[in-house]
Length: 64
Image (cartoon, rainbow, N blue to C red; front, side, top):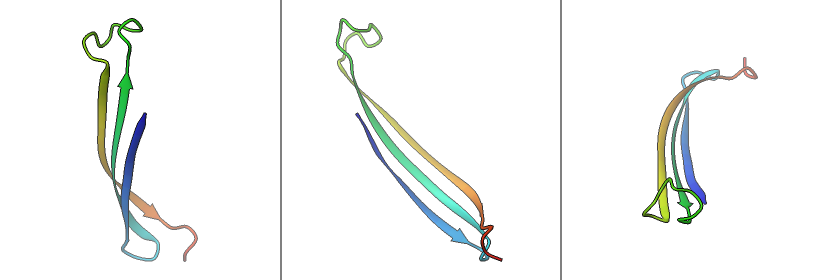
């Protein structure tokens, strides 16, 4: 099972040029039975967390 969230903000310097700031958090649960795989021998529940951030340049072709 996987769940998370993504948040962002757009900031335009001019009507055509701007920046987008993005942050994301995601969590995943992994359940493995002992006889299926030997990757995680002593635990049946494993969690994986991902956190990322980014900045994008935006150019609006429709205005002008």
